Length: 226
Length: 264
Image (cartoon, each protein chain N blue to C red):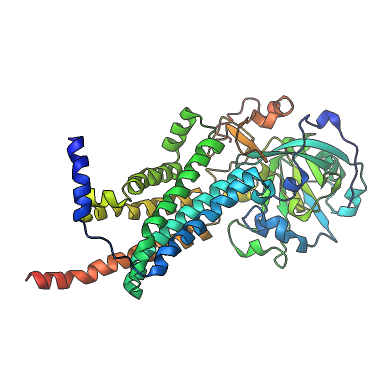
């Protein structure tokens, strides 16, 4: 079975349409985006090993906040790709979407690791209790779990294996992930909801746009069927 | 400015103090913003002179005490553990006098069951006041026996110097066995009262911040455990939190027979 599936793979690959290359500058700007996306984590690594002053009085908190923030930024940026494409016609934007989504996972993963290590000191019993007991931890943890299959199936091979529509449906999980992520932030702050509100508003716009497009499409679809 | 005072070893812990840069750079003082680096960045505009504390309520001799008069009193340095409700901790060399010395000056009557502390409101220097995150002014309270306990320090300095504004200049209270938010900053009013006063954090979220708020590893905050703490600047929260922040020998008797879980 496994061998047959493997044998199928190259054929499937050969048969699939090659994605359009897009403008030349898109290709060489990818490494630039990659490096730019690594700047926040590079700063944290330098802070831990090189210059502790960079991370302030509570380095662990700085690491957790920075990685949590960047995870949310990248989720929102990833969710902006489709609306921006539709509104501007810049179809090359799609070339960056996978990398942006993977950055969200990357920062989310470091965020989780920092929590497990720095906060919980890898105490398994305490971790299970914490995830079970505290809604903001539960939703944050759930968001990262749900992001994992998206990261794994982000490759071209997986798109082909699952088939476009099924792959797209699976990746709609990002709507849930981003919502849980914002909820996680909302529930954890002590008093000042300014930033959670800003994130929630941006998410509402990005998801609301999708709902609006769907609703607007429906009557014409019905007309077509009739 | 220097504010040297002899160390009272009997009331000091043996631990190495947290670096001064952290103590004066990482603060919760919401009047200057909710970020922990906001106070150090913006509190320098605050006016701390002239400064008086209005002391009244159930006392024999209500009076207005000038900060200069307090500075002239016999001060001492005490190295206390400081435990924030957010599960980080420091070790801080404070300079001040026992609060009960101030109480003696006004003579609380038998009706004085609680002490209510009120923080200054300077809208022109405190940008945080524009945001209703708490019911301003910041008010805290102690039971009279807690306030009169020799550990409760009316604090004027830190690290051998006058308190920096972000640490609660010119005068604050330090109650080392309670979570940090009980230790009010920049006090302008002290009232001895009969009823338990409503306090800022308790009013904001009663299920999270109790009136007593004694450091207690057995009572979790709803959003995080209080079993461990991060002794700054450590990365790992590997220090085990002690009941009453390690001051149980001195203060546990204040709560004899009390259920510390319901009276958190």
